[in-house]
Amino acid sequence: MPRNLAAERREIILSLFDHGGLGLEVGPGYDAFFPKSQGFNVQTVDHADGEALRRKYSDFADKIEEVDYVSDGGSLLELIGEPKKYDFIFASHVIEHITDVVRFIGDCESLLKDNGTLVLVVPDKRFCFDTFRPISTVGQVLDAHIEKRTRHTPGQIFDFYLSCAQRSGSGIWVEPNLSDMSLMNEFSVVETKFREATSTSDYMDTHGWMFTPTSFRLLIKKLRQMGYIASGDDVVFTNHDNPVYRFEFYVTLKKCARENQENDLELLSSIRSELQEVTVECTPVPLYGCHIAKVVETYDSNQDETMGAENFLQNLDTSIFTIPSSTTPGDKTSLLRLQKLVSGTVENFVYLEIGSDRGGSLAPILADGNCASLLSIDLRPDFQPDERGAKFPYPTDGEQAMMNNLRAQFSEAQLKRIRTFRADIRDVDATALPKVDLALIDGEHTDVACFSDANRILDFVKPDAIIAFHDANLVADAIQNFEKMLARLGITFTTVLLPDVVGAIGMGKFADLLRSELDELSFERQSYFATSQLQRWVAVGQAMQEQGRISTPDEAAERRTAELAKENDTLRQDLAASRAVINSLREELSAARSHVHKLLGSTSWKVSAPLRYFVKILRR
Image (cartoon, rainbow, N blue to C red):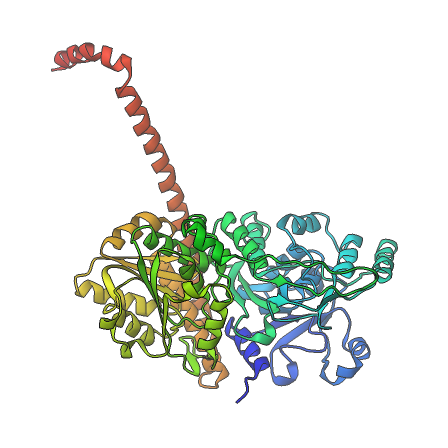
């Protein structure tokens, strides 16, 4: 049966937040995500009333419902005037049109209840007509807020019309390797729009802001850090698994979201890597006397084979992840940290991965000349069950697609090291394979499957090894049960919980190495597992509601959920404060030790030795 991609998109978005209670949809236009006619308890705000919208979008007039609030581009809070009114606010392809992003998010925070969610569907500038425009910076967003901007600037209008591009006649696409690119507007149109923008006070619509998933995360982190907004990104979902909707990503913002622990350098490096994922090889197309230049910037895997693994591992360069995957930039950095630890400790290490999908996480392993063998085990069922109560389709041609992806990046000599098994790990003979130093369980989204795989992996790994878990937040119970089993077996181990959702258990000598090298980067254990459990409960509840198996939670349950979320947030803040104090004390202790060392080696200390001895006798 062919995939219903639109239904998958809708299911994914709805799974990211609790859409019970009263909602506000911003800018539904002619395609409301929450139609009132289908029973959704929502209000709407748009740039025109229902009658005007039906005239503007006459072909879709029958889909347009009445608008509750008509906005002139000013403050949403002032327009609606009822703080803490909504349980959720939903805005699809709106944020890029907003003139003052800081004010918009702040207004939404004020209109939301304390445990409410702001849900944004954001275009990924790499896969739409904004592809040739640079990403928007935090400073540019701050400038717009300081200026209290209510209209896009003439420069923004000029850039939009000048750079607006299309691929094979379409303004959106999904392929990372582009061809047949052309500009949409002749320069006479660009100039006309610019001069119009300089001479009118009317609002002129445009994409004022361009984002990639990580550039948006950096924006939210810095705005929150500086006190401009109270929310953090609770979820950032990139849409690689749904090929039609790769041009957008989904973000949920909540006041109780945990603090983004990635440092700014990692985020900036990840942004650069994201931009490098798209290569533009254009056949020049004549258009108003100009050609689009050929632009090619890709990661050269053969170069790393020559230079050695220390290059990208030493720098934790996430651009090595050349194949699109569901791993976030934070996940990629954490996986590189684990690989760096193993590759720097074991000569000719062996790697095992369960759930390779399209091969995204295999790329850095293949690029590592110190890896002697790669084992990829993936049963590749039609559907992948999930602890959140949903099932996600698995590509039917996954293994062939994975190998094609890898062949596009790596030589046949490099690929000879990889062995693939389309099977359950329980059906693979461990005795016929080399012992493993680093293993990754990826794609197992149920506790039962993850625990079973981890248990079986013990037959494959050396006594000194690391077992990593992607999407650790979804299989937190499996990780904790696996820890209990290791303790009963008398196996020494250490667990770290790394950004964003990578868990790792080091056994034998790697227990000490994980503790010494990565423990400072690990999330606080109790808070992480409590938050993970809470998120799964909410997601399961939503899924059961959608299936009609349970009714909407009562107010007492919602209050308790909010209380737990608040407690988790407090724990995270306390942990951050404690770590800051510990780091400060460590620095003071180090300085004191250095001072004592210098004193003991000084001439004055040696010369005064007889005097100190005489004073000691007098005291006796």
